[in-house]
Image (cartoon, rainbow, N blue to C red; front, top):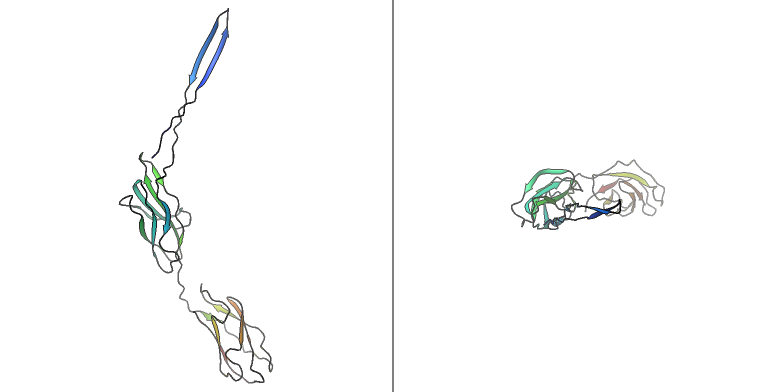
Length: 226
């Protein structure tokens, strides 16, 4: 509820006129009225989301501490600062409502704000909510770039063999957690005789032949998701 407070500033002006032995005092006063508007503390607060890190989940739910204001309305925004409104202003049935579901789009960020009217009919808005980001799940099949034929000397590891992991947004790394090697002749190179390194998506592999082993073989490097 707003309170209207009147501040009165009194200024007294006194003039002394000296004439023929007569002292005259002329007194005036000035009153200034100032209307001070206070913000309403009954707006909705603690604006959050039920979900934490939704992936491919376009239906998200806003939740807040209920407002005590009348004519409550809800506005969603497609940004992090409650600036870019998305959709219509939603009229809520009562001030007791404190949750509302919203359908967003994958990869977008959302916030929201609640509006209401105080006892004097003035529109009062809440602060901006926490941000919600809907992360899309990437279903693109990972790929590995082609690797030219390699050779090395007896009992000598290969030089670093470079290749590129091709994927979109997946959390891969150049390690045995995501990469494997299959040898066509394990008597020359065992499946485990490879060292992965590099920083995704640019990786390298060093292949070590078995002791005193020589010949020609095919190595298949594969990429997979856990």
